[in-house]
Image (cartoon, rainbow, N blue to C red):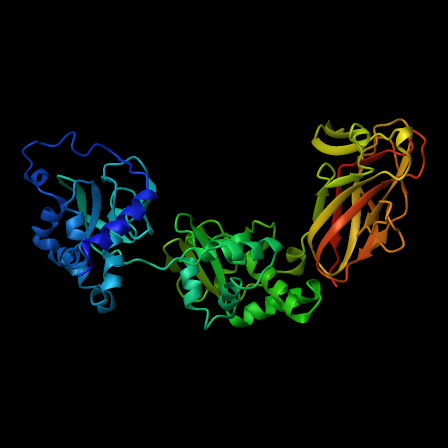
Length: 488
């Protein structure tokens, strides 16, 4: 038998993270001579012949002593017939049985007289169960509701509430037979971004360590989080390989292994969504948090959906995502600059972050630099671009000139700086020619294209003023830059 000390330790840790709430006042309208109110939950459950098998499990695990305490609880108690459905691997294993029993108990009062259509309830197992309507908890039906006792309430249910794996636990469990799962798990060791390696250094080992250090859980969704709900499309090996291979030419890095890692990451990051979509709720298309449109072909779903404690997994024979959808256009807002040069206090006074309306009365934000003669020529404003693909880009800008004269500016991509802080145009990745910025023209303008040999970040993109000290001719303005990747 599990020691009472261990049980109370488990309960203490759980209580630290749970706010006890009462859905109603269950005793307010009950007769004071109700005999059940003289019994503890332990006594009421043990005395009920319909729940004797669950009562035996309570005694085996020490939870009978918990339910005899002065704290209040709700217990969802399986019938004896329901307990007959529990595998012997649970009933005959102490740790499994403790987890099983704890998944039926919550330290709050939940009556079936309630005003919420659906509510997620955290159990002592640290798993969440959904209380739907007035008679459904998880995938079980309440057959005998609202059996009150001195320290809480219990409901008799027709199925055991066996703890389910969460999505991340399932991914780990099938990682030896699923290439996509194996890759996702490998991101506990592999880093996608610099911050991932830092997280791995500071994260203590434990059941939730992956939530902080695995690059997928950090950067996409934390599929180890029991509180939220998700949908994951888990591709068969053939479909996974096909989708990764599509992206490899666009995610070329400095070595083949890095290229494969990035192609895999940009494939699987678009397979998770922040809601548990039931089969009848699945739309024909979903948009990822990164803006990629993913078509959902329901005919490619293999078998039944895998319902887990924090969402649903669909095994997919095929997930055909076009490169037109995958290769996202990069838009850099003019007002989101990272730096400027010369970086003296006087120059900052001439930079304006503006709120404007265009002729169609549509609001926009931009940046404008009104240069002063004392600051000299060659003023520039810098930007960065992350997660760029290894392909050719077509470049556009929208630059609104509210002066009375036309002035010129240019764009330099992958700027390389000289010792004096100015830009070395000969070694920068691409220096576009100067272009005139017409007065009050609101159209997007194509400025040219450039190739990017390796995928990754472009650390500096510079908007450069005309090399003149004439006031009004050395201004800068930018609503946005647009980099459109070209399919090879």
